[in-house]
Image 1 (cartoon, rainbow, N blue to C red):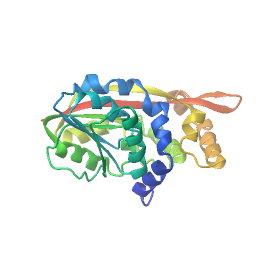
Image 2 (image 1 turned 90 degrees about the vertical axis):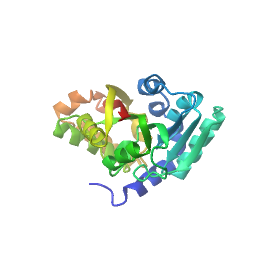
Image 3 (image 1 turned 180 degrees about the vertical axis):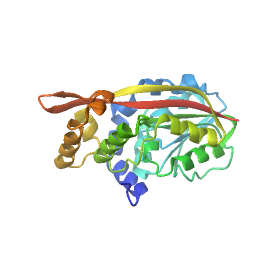
Image 4 (image 1 turned 135 degrees about the horizontal axis):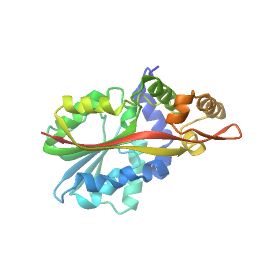
Length: 259
């Protein structure tokens, strides 16, 4: 069941754990992050927008290649953590803006590229987010979406979203890749490249990043251990001596262009 105030849950979760998202290996590293610059091919005169910037890792990757990066996030402590991270890394062309991904405070056609990485599953209305991305992009502008995605099979998608929700109350929903393609096409964004990847999560690090009690961690582990055979295979659940060791999720990296 969705939170009554999902954006409040996001503010609470990310505000309390801002520095963890700066240092988290899942966010600070990854083959998906390595694709940002090669796929977007940013130009020196570009103005880029990174939505839900989190620890600022995409903004950091873009900063040396563009004129300006606007790092936007719903949560003020997260923005402050990103700013400390990026200024410490020597990024001097980044602006920091508190912004809701579903109601961006920017003019139409303001940006040459828009990025959003490992965040859209926190958005209550992802189609509205896609509409906003299309609105603020210049004609010919590029959008790069990177996020966890659910399997196409409904039963596996349900298991995956429940597991994420138990671990992180700010999680709203991971859609399958086919749904993202429909939303992008509906709002005039044409797919140019895409990749479905797999990301292995060491269970203890993954659950401790967001869980607030031992009871919560135990409940998440019990749910994962009780996974039906199809889910155990799909998510490559690894156990040892009756305890969770790791599991593997799917992610989508998708480059689109505004007509």
